[in-house]
Length: 252
Ligand SMILES: [Zn+2]
Ligand SMILES: [Zn+2]
Ligand SMILES: [Zn+2]
Image (tube, rainbow, N blue to C red; front, side, top):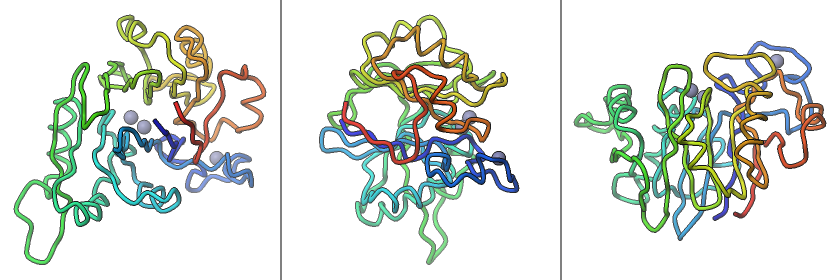
């Protein structure tokens, strides 16, 4: 499985519009964070975890030429606002693209993207999305995936585990049963927003505590805001727990 971090930023991205702080004006490319998303190639499949507003740019930057399906963690805009751009791949496939998520998330998606689920007006072309509920252990086109429940403030969402790799973003709290699903990982990607606490996201210290307990060989943090300067923050963390960055790729 080859994993690419398409975006490692929080909902506003970094630079944050209108902000002139040291991180937002940094020339270090690792301080430039598009909205959080992952691209994975496995078992001959090419798929996304989340499809945010930067998806088109991310696809062009990373040479993504097709998408077979999408896994959704939840339906906040920074994780779904790029779904409209999937219509370009519909034209290649000539069939709908499957979107896997929790039942409640799919219902929300159907509401927020209502124009995709009603007859198109003549001359317009809308994405063709095939909504598929996912829960527990599933095989999708030869890719084995297990959902990992978590809380995002008061919103239940899911992360995903694939064999020795797991991706969890926008988590504020992990239930005990989910810690039990995360043993023996080689690589974990987990969200860490900033130093200060936040009701919907783990802070850096909360994420570090959770990462140490999960104990993956390597943990990469994601969904960071402009409070966390890349090099300075990484210098405070152990080598096996570090901030990720846009364009990071690894095999697992
Ligand atoms: Zn988010
Ligand atoms: Zn800033
Ligand atoms: Zn969110």
